[in-house]
Image (cartoon, rainbow, N blue to C red; front, side, top):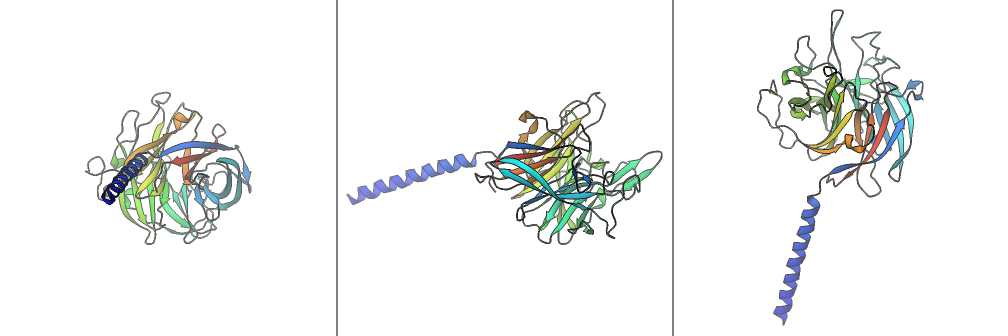
Length: 383
């Protein structure tokens, strides 16, 4: 009798283990996905502390203070170069209101304000991304630089990644490899194609920066039907301010044919967000002349097996393993107009415990465009 009981218990244990195994396998096969919860629009020509709220090119959430930091890409044309601190009230997965709390001017090493292009084109900034380094209460921000060459003027202003204190004054900068310096010949970065995106890792000891478009040496820009555009992502050590390695990331083709067909078109990386375990959220932003909306695709990437391409002079010729990517959401399929998305951050946890992602669009100070805040739920994400 005792042997029969033991045998029955053993069978029950085996069945339970099998059942548990099946449940675990099912859960692990669920793919991460993004689901739109709400859209909030900041009216055009909103004023705050005597500045025009617009050109918002990044967003970063500081959970301890429950505030967001957003940089404006105003090149000191409307108001001095600046970043904002704001509070977003989220109730029942909806954004009830957005309150701006401060507007802080970005300043040079000597404390002076950055000049506008009209006043000094050789010192004019182009702020594009900002992250808050909470360990020492500093800000890291990207200056895209300038490459303007015509019959009247030649401006070669190298892209830079600055560190600023809480008052916005630059106190230090990261060492940028020479391959990313502006050049008069077709080498190095393209104009408006440099550091559009930044992200800190979870331990706040590494910084990632990604090029928006390929270096001239790395081949063609994104085309309409190709998939040959390679951009570089750099990993920096925050303590030494020096680059550690580089990865290669392949950009998707431009989504729509421009009108006319030979008019301007672009697809590039507009923001990145480190999510842990050598994974990133990567935002690709495509736009073609004649289109009202931008075409935004958001990818979950994995660089755990990606090669270090620091020593490869051209990604068209070198042998390497690129960053792997998987589509999370194509915002074209949301059924609403999506503008020029240039920023993303983790927001607060939702009521069900899932992470939220908050995106912001840059309206280019154009009344035909909008400043949107998008709230998404990230489902089936294992941290």
